[in-house]
Image 1 (spheres, one colour):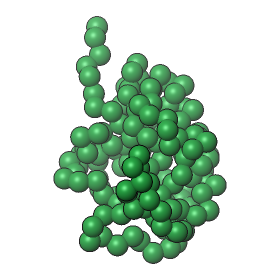
Image 2 (tube, helix red, strand yellow):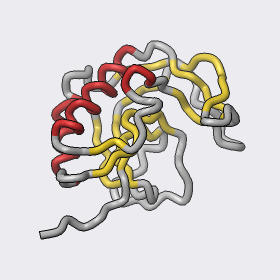
Image 3 (tube, rainbow, N blue to C red):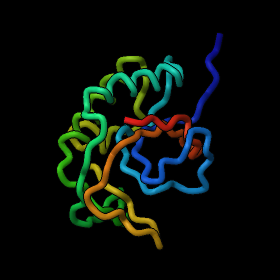
Length: 154
């Protein structure tokens, strides 16, 4: 039996906490935890189970603070605000990357992952970056087509 093609997925903390099933018109302010990946041999439910199981080793919710601004992206033309005190985000990122890889998910681009992971918030015209501290209390599994598959509370 052939597995249907699904759009790639990513995991992020959505500041708006959009509910499961929401089709977003544009990307909300967020902190990417896991970059885009294909399910390969995994199912969406397996991915949700892995995220929930592996996020439990992090304190239920945690705070981060905003840092300096920088220019990111391949051309250095995307303004971002860096996140300070990233230890918990780093642990969460690496744990989820390893666990998702362990169930067969394939990451599309590892350029800014693992040792190169640099948590940040990309700026959006007319939208203020939240003030510090920022409470990270949920994770969203999101398709590349901007549909929220699952909002998961930490």
